[in-house]
Image (cartoon, rainbow, N blue to C red; front, side, top):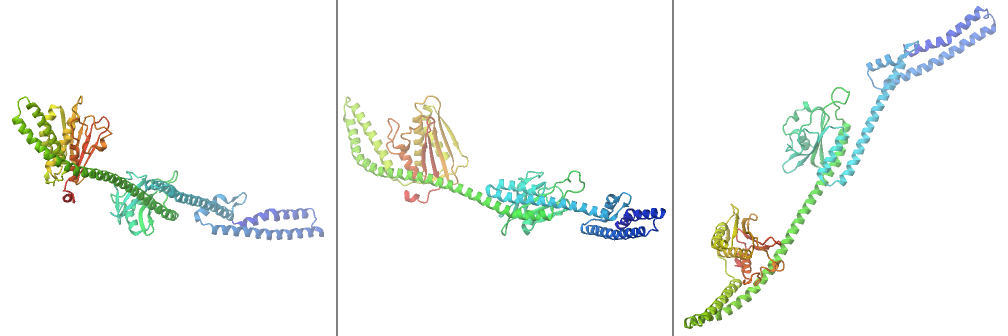
Length: 553
């Protein structure tokens, strides 16, 4: 039934039928013959007709409004039929089409309003996420932490169940997973996608986002190296800094439909695409800034290490220059003094020999004592001459392993008598050095002799550890460590100075001579003596002769 038909029925029941009943009763009681009664019936009829015209116009307006709602709100014929069947029943009249149409239109308007409200809430949430990302990018300096927060909030904003961020290696032109969530395998596994291959590689190559309706039906996901994103809708968005792409963001929907709803899970929309495009613009700059900041910090740290190393090297070089200047000045002085003393000592040796031949038995002990004293003086003078003179180095290829065996063979008897256990540690691939073998042998013999004498009064185990190993590509390191009492802190800084010794019968020239020999070879000789842990002498030598070796020799 149409609304107009229903209006006629209602008017007939409410106006015409009561009027007819009134006329019938007036006729029954013979009142219609009276002029007043006839005038009243005529006026009632006119009023009823006017009321019907007004009521019909109102019904026409309501019907037109229903038709307008029906045309304005989209819907299917099946929906309209269902609405007319369920919502348009009027008691006593049955179904009224226009009422059903209006009810259906209002229902669809409410549904659209709910959907618009949901979209608006989603947009507000996405805008909040965008603002949060902009603020977060300014206070998270580490790239790893920033990427993790970016991925988490991005997935939450678009309701993604699986996601990853891949960064581009510009040198190798490959993408690597930096962070991932929901992946079946470790997101930081060795997964690499080359530029131009797969979805992510094509996005980097073309610079445009890709929206895939179903992963399982897209052939570009068939590569073994691709991270696994399950099924459903998928989106890949580039991370762009100006004209440069630094990575991509991959997002996939969950592999199940929402609770209570059948069919496939919801797909990404153009609104999601627009939101991600705006979000990734801020994210790319934030990631690039964080990477630059981290690289700057790393460069600052390395520069600081270089500065500290150079400061240490400069300090050592200054100490060596001071030591070299001291040794050079003392060497010239000592060489001159030793030369002047050598002539009278030679005369004294000759006179002592003559006295020994001519002396009586009573004087021979005194003459022998005189000869011993003269020989001791000559020994000191020879040490002074060795310390002071600058003799050219006779360089050859010296095998340090063989030289150590030779020195240990020469000192084996003394070491065995003093119960010193020798521990030898030589690197198998130790290269030979370009050096004066005799002088290096003198240095090593002196260090071993000093260690033996330092442990002479030691109770308990006496161990001498000698190690030879590489100290880089072009240097070797020799360390001689003993278990003696060590060197007193008061003199450890001047232990290489001439005439400084801890032995009662020492001359204090052995370490000075050794220091000069090592310096002439372009190496370094240093000492460590932690309290109660003995002494360790470290000798570093270049494998090849330094460029200024000829000038020093």
